[in-house]
Image (tube, rainbow, N blue to C red; front, side, top):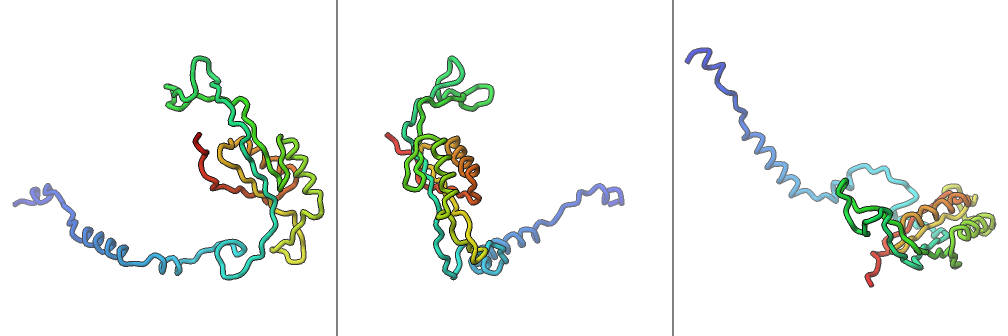
Amino acid sequence: MSAIDDVQEEAKADMTPMIDCVFLMIIFFLCIEFKILEAKLPAYLPKDKGSQNTKVEPMEQLSVGIYVESEGKKVPFEDGTTVGDINPNNDRPYRYKVDNYRVKWVVGPKPLYNIQAVAAELKRIVADPASMVPDPKNPGTKKLMPVVIEPHPGVYYESVARTADACNDAGFEEINFGGGLGPTKKK
């Protein structure tokens, strides 16, 4: 063989060490207990929330439930389409509006039937000195109680967003969202 033949010969990588490494990694991950590994990793989580051995005093909070009173009727925006038709230009359903859709809010124990009444009730609660609760981050001080917005099945995002805006406008600083109430019940 000449030097030219040596240069033209194709170089091939030996894959045996790579395969050995892969098998060793598979064995390692099969044998390791991830709970032990997780306990050794540093986690910088908030100290005032989460699972701890310390007891946390329950904090009073205002519940704002949103319930569907009337599901309404879906009406298409575009002429000549029906609800559920797919737009061939973008492969998405055509837009629709919902006529006669109504929700009921329950602020604490009080049922309300329009967002203006909800906003007025929230402002009344903010002005009430009884709405102040002890602040666990600053012992000896008080803060406005947190509010939890709980949309029930069938509630559209618009109602939740308007409720959050009303809570924010009233002066609530801590707004949380409840959930996990399940899917809409089939009729």
